[in-house]
Image (cartoon, rainbow, N blue to C red; front, side, top):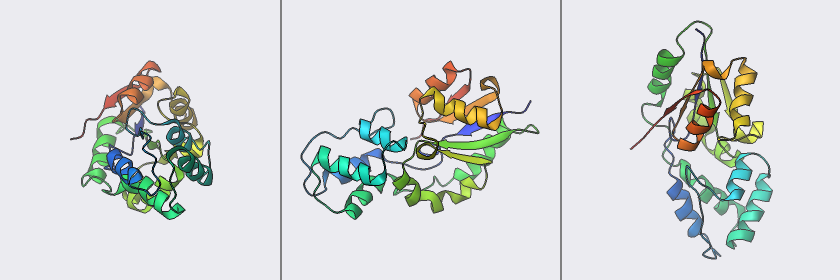
Length: 196
């Protein structure tokens, strides 16, 4: 039976480290000491809004300066924001996509896509490094482009509807418990990935 396979990017194929961005931001000039919440399961509202494309990159930088007191230039803010991506693709990322397709989407007519919660700056920073896995899927959905972000049901339904499947014939591979739980409520088979 044809299956829609939805693969997360960060934490599944790309080695992300939220703490690197937190530490880098706290080291920026002018930082006022306000706690920065930035993790796989919970984030400050501005980070979520930027992932959803609700604020532009310029608005994002302006809001960060307002919230956290940063006095540095745009390039320093951008570098700190993108520190999460310093590690790159997992060494087995290409083989993992092939394995996932073989395991969950081997039947004729099946489709494999990537759905990533990602901001414009993060995408611009990592897109070339991600090309080897992008080349192995049929489509790539980016939250800041589609204006929808996991774990919101609308993000999953947008991909499912666009690809022409039903939730019951969809499999999600994701490292977030919240994303897996939300997809499961829609009838999607969710596989929670745990990385060391």
